[in-house]
Amino acid sequence: MQVVTRFAPSPTGRLHLGHALSAVLAHDAARTEDGHFLLRIEDIDGGRSRPEHEAAISDDLAWLGLAWDGFSRQSERTGLYDAALATLRAKGMVYPCFCTRAEIAAAASAPHGPVAAYPGTCRGIDASARMHEPHAWRLDMARALAATGTLHWHDAMVGRVAADPGSQGDVVVVRKDAGASYHLAATVDDAAQGVTDVVRGADLFEATHVHRILQALLGLPTPRYRHHALVVDMSGERLAKRRGSASLADLRAAGMNGAVLANDLRSGRLPAGFRLGNP
Image (spheres, rainbow, N blue to C red):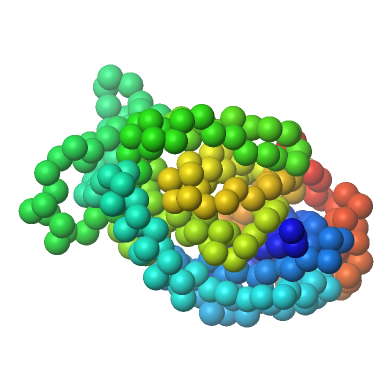
């Protein structure tokens, strides 16, 4: 089986060192096995995605010395997500949700105590007269778990993992404002693109529980996973676009050599002011 990996950033800001680490590790996992490394732009959030950020992603990867064997955009793959939703609907595994964020937040702060996940407000209601209203689609987790039974997946860092998607409740699989959620789009794309090994940050470890049950419901293969430690600053804060963390473009402007940086990341060495957090 030929190894296929991918780097799948969202074009909502500039890449930082954490992205660089994921890209280098995914790239090398394919190259060492004479496999394929794919670049997938996860741009289904049309309100936040920007073409200038997409162009910058290509520039940053080239600066690091990384080349890819295939390119795609999620915004051009919505038919696949529609088909996946149709399958889940036909199996009775999803339901429309009309709740606003404010309503969900109010439920989470109710006097009887916070809820860990969506409280199922719209589960079981007759929605036939409301389908013209904006709505998301949520996975009926209890029904899904009953259909799939016990599931597992393998992570290169921790070994065999028992999937626990139930702890995340009735997750959204199609957003009100987009043709899919991250969970559905990433799961469908990985299968459609033949991804065998998913290399990504430990912040997405919990998401894999949801991806595993979607794979089972949709009859899709399960890749091998490697969730690596995150790059953090010296105070232990994870890097994030929204926090204004130093970008790769900032490091390039400061005179850093991208190929040298990539080799340092391969060896676990980070620039001054950064370190690896706990896995």
